[in-house]
Amino acid sequence: MKESQGGQTSNPLIRKLRYGAELSDADEQHLHEMLGQVRDFDAHTDVTSEGDRPEYVHVVLEGFACRYKIVPDGGRQIMAYLVPGDFCDLHVALLGEMDHSIGTLTKCRIAQISRRSVDEVTAGWPAITRAFWWASLVDEGVLREWLVSMGRRPADKQLAHLICELAYRLDAAGMLEGRSFAFPFTQHDLGDTLGISEVHANRMLQQLRRDNLIELPGGGRRITIQHRERLEEFADFHPAYLHLKKRMK
Image (cartoon, helix red, strand yellow):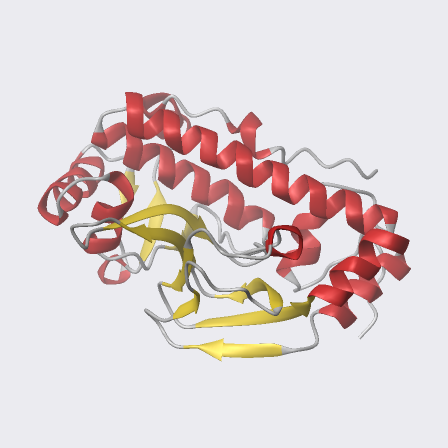
């Protein structure tokens, strides 16, 4: 269904890409058509694995996924969370082979875009191409910030920084409800993200709750930021690296 440029849309990819380029009605309609092929994935399922040569570029429409690598001792290192509106593997249209794995953390709906469609966008849709480029550069910015967190921030500040980041990213996808959003990550997921034990991850989460910075309603499947400014100050969080200032008027 065609939706007007700049209007309300439930499509998280289009909501996100509007931050990267001024998309016309035709651009947005073409994006809708590109996302026509959709698959459902169960939680804890690989979408693509390291070494694969995927036939499609994947976009998360619903649910949460992650980028990860398995190290020689069998441990998992999560390198990025993928939320609705995120490309999983846009780079494979150029590089061909996956150098890491993409796995679901919850049930997901994921759109599949053929490599041919990506090539056609590059050849004839400059605004969409700019938006795709922007999305890739934002992914790099997020990766740099995660590297800083892992190298220089203690675990409690790492976790606080991650919560702040997710709030901004989910807001861009239209999934923030006031100060609350889905937080379906297990202690195991958080441990593999922060490079700490599950027990330590839970301890850090509960400490943020005791400090009245967050609430964990619904058995911890959602999170509410109690005091956003205090949480951002504690985490030394500055959202500039997410580049979420809209270019369009």
